[in-house]
Image: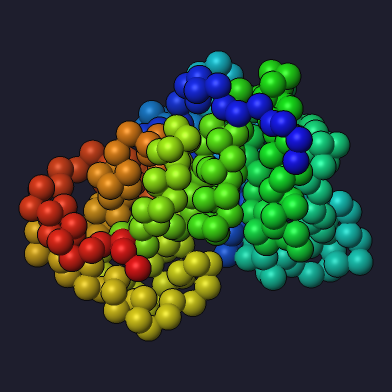
Length: 328
């Protein structure tokens, strides 16, 4: 990799404390209507959320289209928008008869995802996302899940150069990497190039990667926490063994740990989702710029906003610290 401009330390766009994640808007796990999607986004806006994150991966562009339709009614300078690159969407008529269930989205599989980490691929990915959303710019551009490609290390190197070029040109304000792979995220932080990392599922009550936080601290890299509920397991006061974890089934030992955490929270008069939502701010301090949460209904948006504002006694945080919450 050639000489890549590192982050100049400029403040990244405001992405918190709570941001709206777009995976559910792409029909993650189950289909939702356009009307429901619009109501979810309206509830976020009405609740004061001004950061909206999406990706081509989410419903093969459906999430971006729905977000774009909503954005057209808003003052653009009051909204922070992020999307992601690395996967290009290309027509796939041979699979259009089935759904995209292999990737977890209830949409027709009429496109396929094609990895492309080159400068041209990153530019095309951004351009196509802007067209789907009907906007002229995004504020933050993330590389999405390079660890899931055939060449994670090579993809990260190539896309790092490409993203740094776009930031240097002024095409985007900030760049980052979004992933649930701690190894990939640490490698991204150690480049010193990225403004933000979107960390999915690795900085939660169930799992806390302090080494990743330390890497970000060394380079002044901000953290956006996604997956604070670990795909759903921590989203209820009484965790269900049937809940999603890591976008799949919950292993029995993980459910048992979630249940123990719920009991600890209940003993201090706090519901598990409230503690899970606030925990990254408690443990990550000033590095955590915000938490991004998806929702399948407007009520979930309002519930998350309410949970963020609820008081949590210091005694619970102290107990969780003593029992090693998040440490694996």
